[in-house]
Image 1 (tube, rainbow, N blue to C red):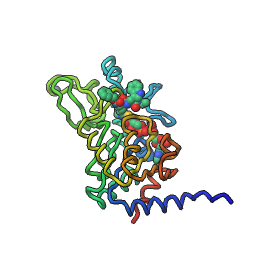
Image 2: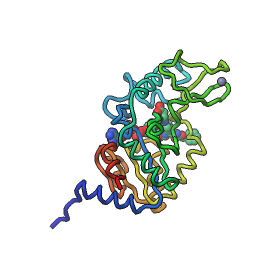
Image 3: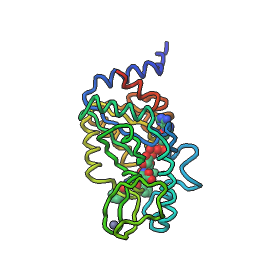
Image 4: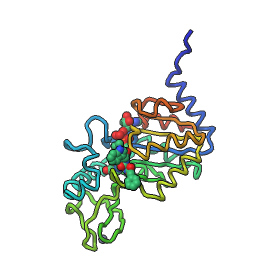
Amino acid sequence: MTPTQPTAQDQLAQARAWQRDSSRVTVLSGAGTSAESGVPTFRGPGGLWRDFKPEQLATPEAFHSNPKLCWEWYDWRRSLIAQVKPNLGHFALAQLEQRLQDSFTLITQNVDGLHNRAGSQRILKIHGDIWWTLCLSCNRIQSDFRVPLPDLPPRCSCGGMLRPGVVWFGESLPTLTWEQARKAACDCDLFLIIGTSAVVYPAASLAPLAQSHGARLIEINMEETPLSGSADLSLRGASGEILPQLIDS
Ligand code: BV8
Ligand code: ZN
């Protein structure tokens, strides 16, 4: 008699119990968390823009060789993001932060700012933010919500060229933010990895790091990922549907 596979309902019930019993929860979100808001994911169907792959555009080399093309991509993404709204998954994470206060940490790979707009306060943006600009001359980082941007590439008030305030492939992650993210992975007893293909490093290394420090790992994804096999629970489905059920007290 082979043991019956747990149903999706059983798995959700188990995840809810673990979430209720946990004392410190850390979340790592990826592009899938924003998919139901209408923001295209990086590696999913439809892709992100024309026939470019993100790895070709989201690099310092791409920017320096053609800042205008690179900014056209970011301006297009900014204009698209400005028209969408956070989804129920974003709001559920903001609600969990309200409930758990400083026993909860949200780490995001996303640069779209939708967690902020859903009410999340303390967010570790390990890949930066598409609404930030960084001046290549005076190094000032500013929020800039203009869509579309008046000229590409945009200029700083000091006259210097601006770049998007995001972390590109081949660039290091912001040191303090990354250290805080690692600490939140080490200190938690429940790590939720949501809507990420877990192929980008070092972000994806946070899940095994949490597990090596004793945390349970729950994955929420529409598809299998390289981490599904090692997760304590892998909930198959949309984060905007699963998260409200998971945190519903
Ligand atoms: C670093 C900001 C080193 C920009 C991003 C070879 C050459 C060069 C580098 C490397 C290399 N091999 C490995 C590397 C390292 C590289 C890397 O990991 N590359 C990958 C592609 C192999 N990493 C880096 O370069 C990092 N820096 O390593 O520095 C270093 C060290 C010291 C000194 C100097 C340098 C920097 C990585 C950061 C890159 N920047 N974004 C921008 O956005 O424009 S990464 C980009 O990918 C986004 O941030 C995105 O979030 C991230 C990860 O993608 P996902 O979020 O996972 O999105 P994806 O589309 O892949 O998946 C979506 C998932 O959601 C899917 O699983 C899908 O099933 C699921 N889903 C869909 N809908 C739903 C859903 N799930 C739930 N519900 C739904 N509704
Ligand atoms: Zn400047």
